[in-house]
Image (cartoon, rainbow, N blue to C red; front, side):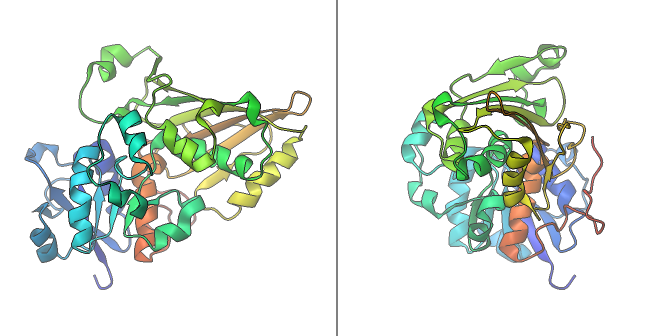
Length: 346
């Protein structure tokens, strides 16, 4: 047990929290600790009684020897908990949206809340390791990205950084997610009878993940049309993104741009010409799969990206960030020794 870290999970009964526990159970250097921030039934525990459970209180965390904390909670819980944890010297990976945005006005507009600790917003590293790895390594607070922005940002940022898009025609992102992305708390829109054999759009022009995409890609709001839709499946996100290049480009030229940014990245898989990702290929994994088609005559590029919303879109990326913060190999607990993804699709 030497040189192992004890890492607490707040919100372990939710879908993302349970996924964190599943991943950490197989991590070679981390032992999970369940942190109770509210009364829960023993029946809600995702892995039984063998994982330590302690009250979510600063002294209890010290007594238990907790080294870092995951917050798989609501924004309201995270904004209250993070300052106390940081003051106690405990690094945090926050899976809520509490510290993802930089401006107080964005929280007022997109989340309809007044942020209670705006002084911490600039302290948080945005936890998209493929682009902000060095910032994550030196941070004590990491804001884990939203699920939709993870797929969109990994698809768009290389093209934006190379300045090859005709921005005047805009970017259209058609995003579809499994029902687990709405969380475990029951609601009418996620009721079986509402979801099964159905496909519905929601939060059109108002989706709270839009500012994350704008921030990371450097698009202006009028340049992005983002629509989220609910699929009648458990897990997975598939995004189809439509862009146009300034000049005619061949498939190989676009592929060279993605290769420039993702060569050697362990969790981004680029598809060969003529193939596109689907949900089955990523379920239960921490991969973001990206494929695209190019029409030089019309300068259109259609990008298809797929992630598991509970893994690369939440818990898996959070573990990726924790590994960077604590100095472990970035793939620890996420890839087996053969370089393949642990965990079967569920």
